[in-house]
Length: 411
Image (tube, rainbow, N blue to C red; front, side, top):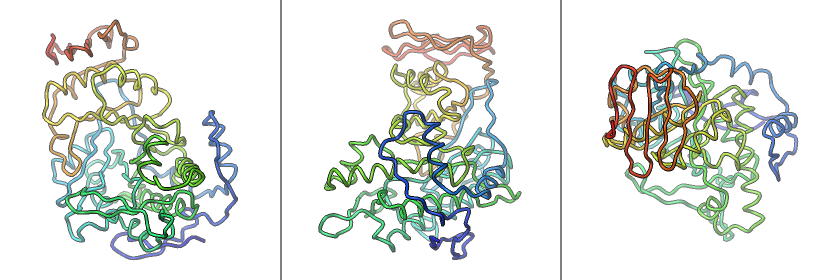
């Protein structure tokens, strides 16, 4: 049985729950992921011992995420690096369709730059105390063994599960993220033990209870993916072709492993979502840096129905003109399950909390898909009561709401 140490509720305890730990191992590798993802998932699940308690975990989620055409559906994805979420952020998250608490939560709060899991848990509980039914998503990354999380420190203590160069030294990634000099290790996805530890930690956090006895988190947001070639060149450039292939094969199993661990009905985001074909097994897609251009609209249209939940994330800040055109682009491409969020801050929530009146305007079901003629896109909702026009070349737009209000610079 894989046994490792984690900090839950401020108490050091060993995670030996068989629901969260693989103890029946069958050799399994995906050297080629089948094009049919349903077949791939079925093949994967049939190759493992599935524990009934894992499915009980998924069944105790607070409430399923409900889609509506009544108004634009929105989400919030941010954190507060200096301490607890303030009441405004808590209230906004509680009122959103879903909320993701980013990795910077409580980063500068004691214990500084560590204990990220419990800090996020405490923030999520504060949101759930306001709205027990809001969908909460746990953020985690796939690229570096960040010591901000207890799991990152565990990997540092078990460095044989991190990538090493041919000279035996640990491969490192350095940056100044979070305002300090960081020296992160890199997960060695070619090793099953590394994959198990990563998945088990996520499952242990997701299964944490809120104050109403439900799972605190309804799913996970996995950040840090890249396309295959740039990923290996950035993270493991000195590896051999065979080593890169083994590393990627391991990484491609993680989406399926998460589905097994926290339930196939859970919400499992891949970010950036454009690489989903290379790394299957995820049920939700994150379009980061979504903007008012043809490619982003077409990509959003192409994945409607492919994923049950889509995070359409626009980096807006307080740029109202960009907000107007990007919201128009979203409305042209939106389908069931696609949610809009406008914010450029991760370590604080200020620009996510701007009270855009558009979020409360009546929308209604679309009269058809967004149509393109040259650089001009159009779409209407609710029998034409709401209409949208966007020119992706001139970056001009107009949204005419059923209420009579307008949004944009070309109305």
